[in-house]
Image 1 (cartoon, one colour):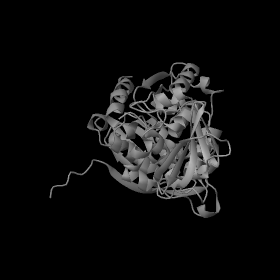
Image 2 (image 1 turned 90 degrees about the horizontal axis):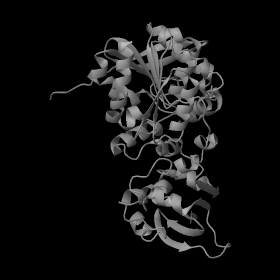
Image 3 (image 1 turned 45 degrees about the horizontal axis):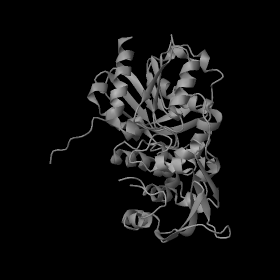
Image 4 (image 1 turned 30 degrees about the horizontal axis):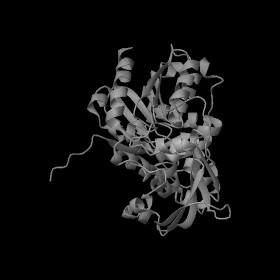
Length: 122
Length: 282
């Protein structure tokens, strides 16, 4: 079962050696926004080392990916319905907002797609 | 060791298009009505290998697929290193019609996907009586970009990786994993800036919704086929196109994405065979 609070996402990602290998050049913090709540996800060499709720505006990330909680619920279904099955499909439909320094996101796009979808129902 | 070769024959030849010559790679299989297959932007004719190997199809059709210039095993023109590749409506039409003329194909069925699905409608608009039918896979007459093409060709982003990562959003989640990743592998192998140059046609130069209503489907039947999970040529855009092209036949492929022939060949066959039968029976 997925957790909107991202509980256990770090364990799921870090236990996937292919995903960690894909993200081996990633060292940064980014924001995943779930409704009104921003989560700061810190990555070192492809592994998530910290997930925390953002409390201060001065604590930020390199880039942000935000959607309504209802959209993430659909994205994290085992077989998502169309428009919700991929964050760029959500982008095409206007269901997601991305902002900030997009270069590391684009350099590692499949890694970030797979990291976020790790929260999907198994 | 007994080898079971696939029934595909690959060939090279030089194709003259306007003032340029291209060494072109093509594959073919079967005999009968010519069925010319056009690959998607940024990929190549390998996408059609399942069609080329399907006896139910090759027993009635001479299936031909070629790599567009700059794609797959087809070469760019001489002095390509001094130019920026950018596909246009007129340039694309010239390549396809030159290929048909060079091979002497008589009233072929042309089946294109994505940018190939768009160009078949342009061709039908121009010379409907030259074709037996057109099958436009994932090819609407009006599209809307949702990302900046400059990300596809710059030194600090790996072109192959980002091309595959972009189009992975257009593969249905139900499609078999090995076919999903084979489809993406093709995207990882495109030349620098080629997917971007194709998308110039696909997103910026190829809209024809103002004139699509002029296509005469009594002379050239048009079949529009779109995957449920296609977030580019969405089912809504396909049905809107079908509404404008009077007499065209829209077919929604449930559980399918943007690459029907390569991402889920078995499911695609279920949708394609009735279309081919309809064409044969006409």
